[in-house]
Image (cartoon, rainbow, N blue to C red; front, side, top):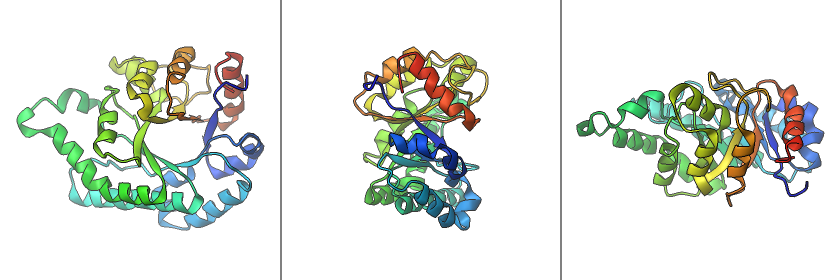
Length: 274
């Protein structure tokens, strides 16, 4: 049982108050969700961060945050919007440095439209332009993350192609840029847009994968259900994860935080995680 991968969870600091023992007793991986809120980052975020640090006294696990994403697109074609994106992501790195967090989740710029259209007009080089815009937005952020020992992991949102984020991460040639998979987002792409199943996303990412959001879904919407309530083939997902050497953080990201402990119990009952 002790050889099974250890599950972590994503939660706001208010939920950590009630799940403190669960996290600290085994130093589980933890992702703090408060700091994806742009208004909080514009205000007194240090008060929240100080409370988080107090709750994590003695914690030696791997700590991360979900970075800002609401209304943001790192590939925006608008120069002023890219400048705003850069500033918001730099704020996220500042939070990581303050907390001692070593990972920050950011969102993929690719959409369902991208899958069929980035190569539709090769003379316009839309794919190359999108990557260039990402670099214009994120180059300074990547350098700052390198200096702070933070790795940003690019999470699939609407991505149908499991490889496209991997290529984007590779294009930065930096240890500060890696890949995340959200199982529910991948299952949505599979069920609604004909993408590969979730375990294919894992294998295609390979050892670029340093983070995974575990949530169950039905392939129709972004459910963030407790594990076992949807139709994801969890044995296949964990079999693919077991082939990796990158030891990705296994983060339960559920809409109802009361489902965290039952989700751990469910995966433990299958003999695939604890």
